[in-house]
Image (cartoon, rainbow over all chains, first blue to last red; front, side, top):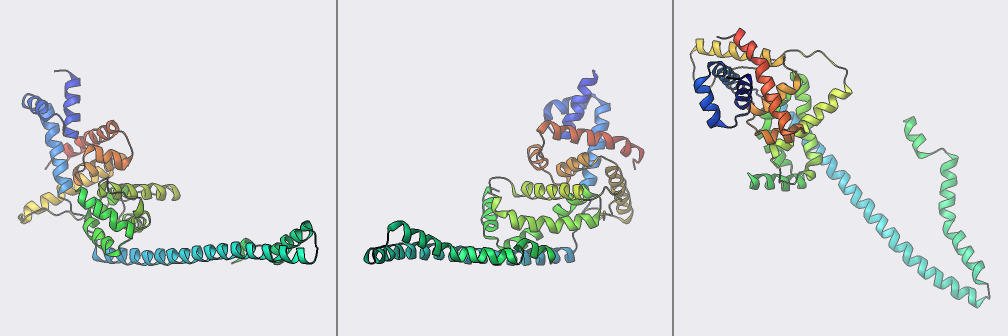
Length: 150
Length: 180
């Protein structure tokens, strides 16, 4: 019998495939039968070893998972709140812009101010809060720099 | 099996804590045993055990229920083990302390022999390369199919077969030397 046949038989013993061919081979090959016996011993021994997780580990894990679930839920709720705030602000800003634009246009016509002038004025006034906040933040250092100090 | 996986997937999408409690209890021994074979150390295995379930909670929405939950769970545990191994300095692995008991009601002598044989095999397992140890554990302790193992370890089927075969072959002289 060639070495390849034994090699094939051993691989099949390990992987549990081609049972009929393997049975035939094992019936006539003591060498591979011995390997099959050793493999069975390993399998039996591995299956007979109960590894038990202690109740402390289980309860600690369950508690940790529940705590993390609460944290994730809180984070999710905060994200919803932020999303709702952002959406509301966007809607209100859009509506306000349209109303103010129409109002200023009407006032400018009444007091005879040219369109480029009141339009530039409107943009400047709109951007003013953002510019002021940016200047203030730059004056006291960036937000990230503050966090790093902590 | 498919129904159970789908039910688990739904529960994980909801981050249902009761479902997670049940899963932790259901898979406690299998997961810890697998981690013990991966790490070779009880303390590390227990840390990873907790980390794995936290990760299951966080990534539960990615589980679609089409794949067997056990294989998915073991994949998470394995990835965490790999991450941890990358982070830590290599440490010498101490032999795992496992309780070996025989099934049923054996005599004291049978019990002692079984325990001795199990210890002997475990000692042999500890000397195997981690990838062989992992393949043998998944195949023979967890009873996974070759395809499932390939999914867990992210390797081709041929590699899985080869690792199981080489693992058993490497254990053979060890077993012969300590035949009882």
